[in-house]
Length: 229
Image (cartoon, rainbow, N blue to C red):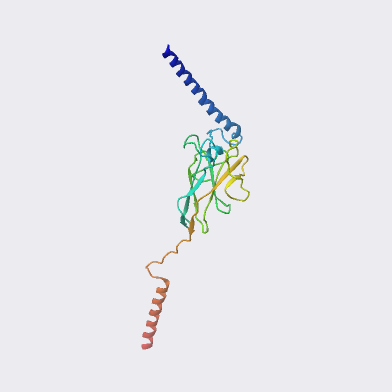
């Protein structure tokens, strides 16, 4: 009797488990269907397009954890600057991608958008991109940092901690995007420096001054020989 009760209890727990898990999955799919399908394709279904999964560190959503870092602290003009954006609290591969990342210069100029690392189009934004992701921008004289914006749907859990609204052309915080119902959470990279490229050295080891001096000496020798005649 005791054994049968235990078996019945285990069966009930298993049934409850099967009942709960699909309901969670279906809830996620319903969110996607109600919010995203007006503009996006029906597959893949993803939850990463919500800011709640890209900007917060835990399911409590009480703080922002987006961070952008560069691979070096100093560059030469023309170098590739590798910028890595991290964030979110779901493990990699939990759901399909659909993360869109933009990189801006300090004056707000868009430097990287539709990149090989995060390709996107009008219906399936970055279907192969997930956080963390590394993008590349070209080093330009005068650069000291870059802004990185993670774009997703404007909705988040009620009461969640979000970035302050950006009132200028570019800055750290929440920025309205051109696409309807989307915003970017923008962060700033660490500071770096960009040096001018070193001038190319002449071949043979001699500078232009050495060549002029040698030419002058050869000319003087020629004139002396001609005068002696």
